[in-house]
Image 1 (cartoon, each protein chain N blue to C red):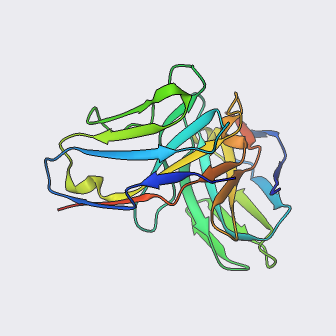
Image 2 (cartoon, each protein chain N blue to C red):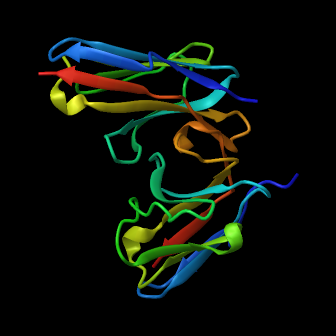
Length: 118
Length: 111
């Protein structure tokens, strides 16, 4: 079936503007993850959704970042008042169950959204 | 599908002793990453290895990637109490679209 999709693939914005990034997980996957990856770096965990449970927001770097997951499927990551240091690739991943061992389950990644804040 | 196994699951050491965790993938990997997760926290990226046989060092930590790009190890010399946590390896498939975390090795250090 279809994999994880993300849109837009690239986004250029001006400092201070808000941006919305979208993720469509694999159908039937209950867990959804957002990560940020700066050039040459590994994944920086941002937020995690699992079913109807309250999301784990512990990785969000500031209150300018927020995310929603509507209907247990599509997720939107919103960055308000963007700053230049927000420039990175934002990756979304989903996994089937994402239970208590969520980081141990294979995660399927989308192609990412490359964000550039000028 | 891709599986990544990590051993041991748990390791208790006396402060000052060395520690090693091993990671083995069922398939050849594009790269391998290592993360550290403190109790109650989320995984934090430590390093990425890409080349066959690659060895990288970060202070007391030494990371190796096997020649076949299917296994990796993390070695900590002279452990300290600040090293406490769970160490995860994560392998990226050669197609680049799957990241599979190992089960993690939980390190406990006695002062």
